[in-house]
Length: 351
Image (cartoon, rainbow, N blue to C red):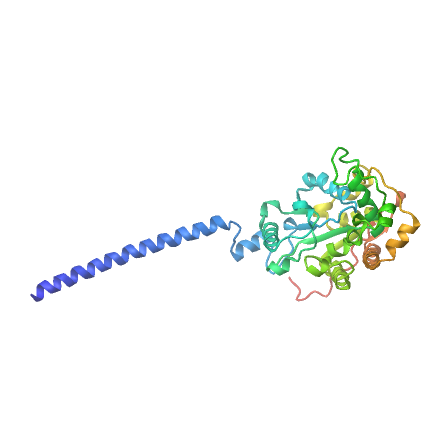
């Protein structure tokens, strides 16, 4: 009887041991499948060593072949002419140009689209180095846990000049796409008449553009005449942007990018000076506003804040230009001042 029980117990142990082996094998197989699935879903996930190799070093080292430049272009500031230089240079300089087209040209994204955009830009390794451009308000990548920030650049224009250009652009189009039907095509109302009638097409909401574009995706940024938005826009321009130029001095803006970011913009200045891509888009018809119209628009808080922001950007641009460029040769050509610093007293000395 005892022998029979011992044999039964032994068989039970063997069976349990067999089940354990099967379960272990199944677990290992399942773990392998999960790992493969994770890899297929997130193909850019890399080990620390792989990241160091991919991005040029540890500790946030700068790798020029992984540069991402974001040009969140403000409408009617000469952006088509400027980005035309990048499209002409991308094959020669071996970088990518990607246009971001938002639905109905809305400059702000939903929270989920913000995350999608940040993820795409950060992990789309095949498109690095590259420049993204589109009518998008400033988006702070650090809010999403990104350690490597893109380089922001932009151009701004005198507020009233930009408004006049935009007002007539949506009515008459431009010489770049003369057959394209604009949303106000056929409307002959002049800006002067619009202001007298206090029509919505020339309300201060159409003047409140450059401040919110630099301010970003906060709700307060889009409140016309917000002092907070102005201060935030100034802060971002100084702390978040590599370079902000002005439409009226685009040549110097291009020269500074050519010398300071040659991985992307090498040759842009010569191309601009050649005149081939210096002015790609011109509004077909514009009627200059009267002095009465100008005075009425300038007598608004929105214009005062927009103009203050423009002058702030202009002063900063001039400061950087003076430090960076010097006129040399005929024709007013600008050249880089060259390196004005050196390393010394380096210790310990190496044999």
